[in-house]
Amino acid sequence: MADNDLGLISAESDPIDQVSQLENRYLFNARRREERLKVVIHYITMITILLVFIVVTVVFLIRVSHFIMPDDYKWLTDEQLQSVDKFFFSGALGGIMTRHVGKLFNNA
Image (cartoon, rainbow, N blue to C red):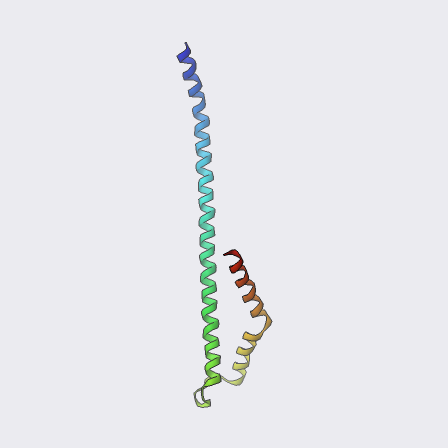
């Protein structure tokens, strides 16, 4: 009779174990999904920062080349050069770059 009682106890605990295993799998997969999402967002952010850096560097090099080159080789007008200067020396661009670089270094 004692063996039958132990069998009933283990049979009753199986559904609870199955539910807890399902809960653990769900929670584990949810954590994995969250981590994957964070990794994807990180890569998108880093690629965006890299692209912005490349564009700003190219525009800066164009501006410097126009400053150094003789007049015969310049292809931008004075108005276009002024708009490039506004782009670099405006407070908005500097503020955006400072904020993002600051966040990047604070998170690292």
